[in-house]
Length: 233
Length: 233
Image 1 (cartoon, one colour):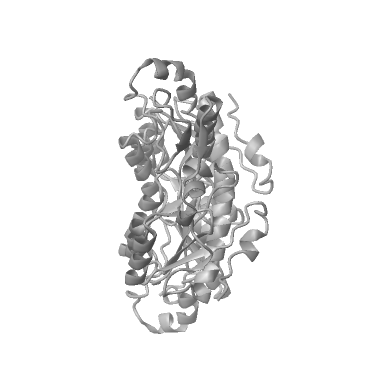
Image 2 (cartoon, rainbow over the protein chains, first blue to last red):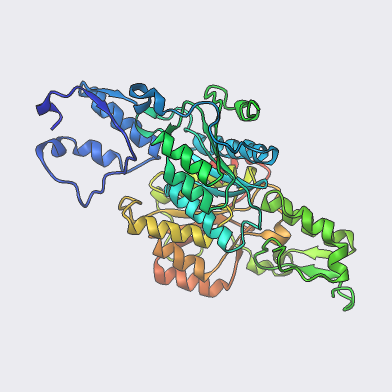
């Protein structure tokens, strides 16, 4: 379908699900692509998405990231909200970034929640929304042990194909984080997309949740977690 | 209450929840222990449990692990079921053990699920049962992408206080793993408890889920993951 319409540039936005092999429509293009589609059944998400990009590039398309086309969608550095991270939040953020880096190295997920020094939840295939709902459930059960705090951290995996799978937050993320009783959200600046930026910030202010962009140096996975998490305060 | 009854030895069995500060009964003993109880509000689970053990030891109690008292509860090496891990399962097991070791080093959790090379779920504060229910949900949504496989791996965290927080599996674990469509469960031999051993194995055979004890060398976190996961076949 892309060929017929003379399209040569692709911007891939939004979540990418693995193909569901029960529902694939078999047309000629799909038959030609079948060995490729079958190869997507194995491996971590990042592995799969890089291959999707390569698949299109090998066929002559240029693949752009949403951030290349609309840089104003990228999370800036610093605090975007009235509420800023407290010293306790910073401690939780530092641990959560350490966890997310460890997850990323194993191509597991892009997000984690830490509250009072304890890792409440870690994202794998279920995605950030389901992870936050789980934290809200832990809170309801009294298993987040009464702290009215906690930080969601999101960052890309090392070497992640950011053109197709950039971590994203939006108003829904804020609402779910608030339901889970978190004090805020910290993400890797310039490496996370904010959907509906104004509404996201307004929602965060209403819900008294902070939104913080942490300087992010992908090339120094060893120490950037320690040095890169301080608000400029 | 322990003092009055001349009890000097403790065996702590079962899940340990953090104290819920709303419901603690204030008696003299609790008042004396208050600074200690408050200190339990921070840090990872392992950190907390080690302090619980130290608390009792400092008061002259001997704390025993369930495995010391009833060694027959400990998972042995090798396959316990009619079904044994396939070559694909072994690959998933190796990755899952690598993930669990990485989690353990950060005091996050004791379990992970890997299917076809992809990390489906990682355990943090929610526990293994909730994690398996999540995998069943991913399967229902078609997001485990149609593979009728996957392995649950459970192992202790490095330096974990095994006397109070030994990872445990039982018939319920088997049922939930089967619901999630997993082919089996692999755990660190001698470092995981099996509750109701016979019923657990019978349930696994009924559900055609394998149960495998992987040789486990806690002192070599670097390479034991690679060398220690082969079934003796």
